[in-house]
Amino acid sequence: MDHFLYRGGILHAEDVPLTEIAAAVGTPFYCYSTATLTRHFQLFQDALAGMDHLVCFAIKSLSNQAVLRTLGKLGAGMDVVSGGEYRRAQAAGVPGDRIVFSGVGKTRDEMAYALTHGIRQFNVESAEELRVLADVASCLGKTAPITLRVNPDVDAKTHEKIATGRKEDKFGVPIASARAIYAEAATLPGIEVVGIDVHIGSQLTDLAPFEAAFTKIADLTRELRADGHVIRRLDLGGGLGIPYTRSNETPPLPTEYGAMIRRVLGDLDVEIEIEPGRLIAGNAGILVASVIYLKQGEGRDFLILDAAMNDLIRPAMYGAHHDIIPVIEAQTASDQRPVDIVGPVCESGDTFARQRAMPPLAPGELVAFRSAGAYGAVMSSEYNTRPMIPEILVHEDQYAVIRPRPSFDDMINRDTVPPWL
Ligand SMILES: *Cc1c(COP(=O)(O)O)cnc(C)c1O
Image (cartoon, rainbow, N blue to C red; front, side):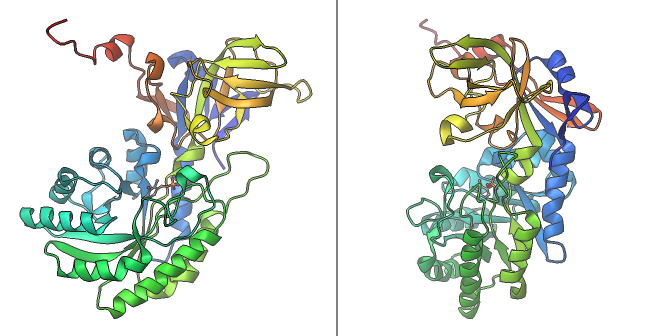
């Protein structure tokens, strides 16, 4: 459920008509709903209620400061995958003991920064990284709390580019090598083992791969404890999928996910961490664009928008589907016609949808891409020297620009010209 609904024939974000925001800031823009972000975070809190747990928002899905502050104030932890994301969490007021550091290529500088400013744990992804972390921590006179990210070799049955838990994927260490690496970890200076980490992929629409992975983690917990390690925390990653179409998708709900976690891991006496990104942010954001042209082609018509692949890359990158709806509600369903919905970028890949049934739309009219909150703004670029589009946060009847659109001068003046020119 989200808070983008038609009222009196106009699509609203909570209590604000999107036409009002469009008139004030221009299109295209991203718009997020505080109530939806809050609701989704709370669903996970409720799903794990009664278990010792921390819900860490995966910053990479949506990293605007205003969003991080909204979630941080509710008690969320943050899952970061770079020194930059660590600083974002810090700037949003999230204390180090609620920040977990994931990622397959952490550098010495990133490790040192996090150790100096406070960290809940590093999710270590290889024996090589473990040794470097031990070195960095001991040089600083610090102790690095760690989990080892294990790769359980389960197929998340999701898109190729977002599956991470098969043995051919670059993430984590094979579960069969885990005991040996934990044994090494126990001998290293500056390292404190606190638990195990797993993250098998994104946009999972079935609980079975999660359950298969978590069952392996439960077994590994018992083995490692028998080996004498302290395993008091399990980080289960993110990955729960969301419905991208209104009609036929019904991914599992956070309550069902939580019940499964309780069933599989509930008797281990561990603290549970989860790292949802998409489920919190995805349906809490939309992208609003204007029609520039309706171009009549041979055998097909093109709806050309002012938003493009540089603003929202998911359709080009993953073949992802986004529902695209008019901001002014269509009067009847009967006059819909199939159109290709495209952006102005000079790439054929700049296509959002092919032969999508749409109501008649004239130049200047507004459309909204649903489910664009996660992996939308964060993956945008300035390709074709198109300014990064503004981000807006709505809270009941108020809205604020939480990232302004840069001017062309801002963009051009970021380049510097060498003295010989
Ligand atoms: C991307 C990622 C997440 C978030 O995944 P979602 O599918 O957005 O929930 C969580 N943990 C790690 C380690 C990730 O890389």
